[in-house]
Length: 314
Image (cartoon, helix red, strand yellow):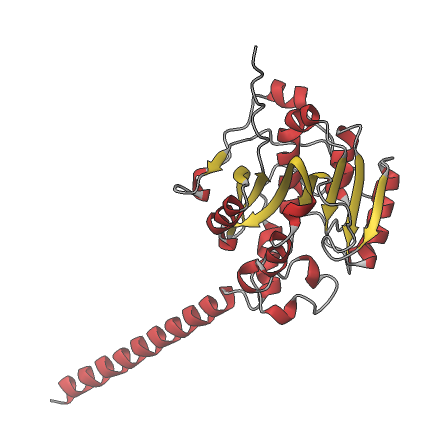
C-alpha cells in the first residue's frame, strides 16, 4: 500500500509540473503574440518602410525594376488585386532603360520633420519611368507635385521630362527647405510653393500632370496635424481624409487630357476611388502595385480622355 501511495504521489507531482509548464507556454505565446501586434500607427507606417520588396533602394544608385502591369478600372468591374508586378525584364533590357535615382544631399536631422524616401517613393519613380514615353508624347506644360516632401519624385521626373514648368508644394516648411536642396543638387528648375493642397493655385484648367503621394495610413483624425512628420503619413479615417479633400475640386484645375498620379494602399479602397473618379468623367488605372510590409502599395493613374476629334465632312 505504501508503494502504491508513493507512486500516486509521484504521478500527481508530475501532473502538476506538466500543467505548470503548459500554463507557462500559453502565457509566453500570448505575450509574444501581443508584442507582435503594432503598438500604434507609427509602427504600421514603419512596417511599410521596412519592406525590402521594392526595386529602388535608399542608397542613391541607378536602380529600376522595369516591372509593369496595368489594370483599368471600369464602373462595373474593379479589382485592384488584379494588378501585380510582372517578372523583371532581362538584364540587358534593364541596363538599356535604367534611369538613375536623383541625388539626395540630406541626412541626419533633415529627416526629423521631413518624410525620408521609402518604398512608396521608389515605387512612384518606377511608375513614372514606365509612363515616361506617354508623358513625353503628351508634351505637358505644367507639372505640379503636392506634398513634395524631400522633392525626390519631382527631381526624378524633372531630370527626364524636359520642356515642362515644374512646381512642388508642401504645407511643411521643413520639407520645402529640404526639397530646395535636392532640386539644387540635381540641377533642376522647380518652383517651390508653401501651400495646403491646391489652395495657392488659381489657374483653373492648367495642370497637365499632378503628382501626389498623400498621407495614406489609416489613423485617428487628430493624428493628421499632430506633428510635421505625422502630416506625411497620417491619413485619418481609412487613410483617405486628406486625399478626399483633393478629390472634391482637383478636376477644376486639370488641363484637358491632364492626369493625376496618386499613391494609395489597398486599405484606402481604390475601388471606391475609381467610382468617385468615374462620376467626374475620369478613368482610373493601376500603373504599378507591389507588396510593402503588411500592405499593398498602388500607383493610380487618374485621367479624363480627350474627346475624339469630330470627323470633317468632305
